Amino acid sequence: MYSTKDYLKHGILFLLTLVATTLAGGEWLFGRSILSSEKPLTWPYFLRSLEFSIPFLGILLVHELGHLLTSIYHRVRSSLPFFIPAWLGFIGAPSIGTFGAVIQMKSLVSSRKKFFDIGVAGPLAGFVLAIAVLAYGFTHLPEASYIYEIHPEYADPNYDKAADENVMDLELGYNLLFWLMQETLADPEKMPEMAEVIHYPYLFAGYLALFFTAINLLPIGQLDGGHVVFGIFPKQHKELSLIAYTLFLFFAGLGVVSPYEDLNYLIFALPLYIGFLYICFRKAGISNTNQWIIALGMAAIQYTLASFYPGIQGYSGWLLFAFLIGRVLGINHPEVPDGRPLDQNRKILGWIAIVIFILCFIPKPFMIE
Image 1: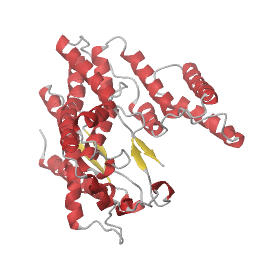
Image 2: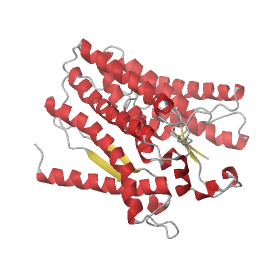
Image 3: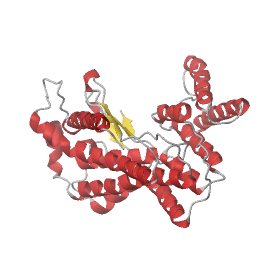
């Protein structure tokens, strides 16, 4: 089914991604880089960084293998997993070493059942491994003094982190599952603050896995969650996908325009933002008039909320992803020749996937100060 050339190409991409995520892990875990002369990523630290990259990539691999093996089972031609390396340390930008992994469908998916099975298999498989990685991380936390290895300045009682201009404070946001596992499995005396989780390889790898799981399970278009919605709601999937996308985009842009901003800023920002919202709905399968109504209505509601609640803020980091969904992936799901409804067992799996999405979704995943 796959040629030697295929295995070689995909294997090289996987190895490059493993190296890239290990390099990124060295930067996050220990603040060390192969490009730094002050704190270089030496071989011992590179090996220790594998404690992040191996579980993280392992979860992504299991996720994609879930899709692949289900595709093979249903005789749907698809590629091997494409891993996308993305280490950005050479330009001084933070990264996790990868943009993720995908498989490419190469033949028609003829039924609702096949779309559902292929879509749901990846998140469920990856989620199980992510739970195991997090459980290990929470139950094998190092002593609280471990943080002094990365930040020796914390041992100084006079050190004020808030006043240190050289520190980029990256705090991870909670989701329900991470919080529940922390409360039930972790030793409170050893559990780090969310701003320090990036230094704990298994916690950070598991956290990122939940982040990617939630993204894939967004109930929109041809994302895995979109396949689930297409399967269990055969008559309402278009409306549900449009509603989910609108709410996602609404939250992403909340606080972008506010009456408390400078007037000169608003003169340019408000029309540009409305135009951005309009463009995001260009592939929504609705009329041009409705696209403008949604864009203007969303901006007006966000502006009004900001006037009553000046501190209200969504998460602008989602805007780029929302744009990619709206313009590249699309928010509609293709129809299939065989549209028969799913059996009861598959519907149960679909609802389990929806619960997993709720548990894993992180409203504000990465907050930088």
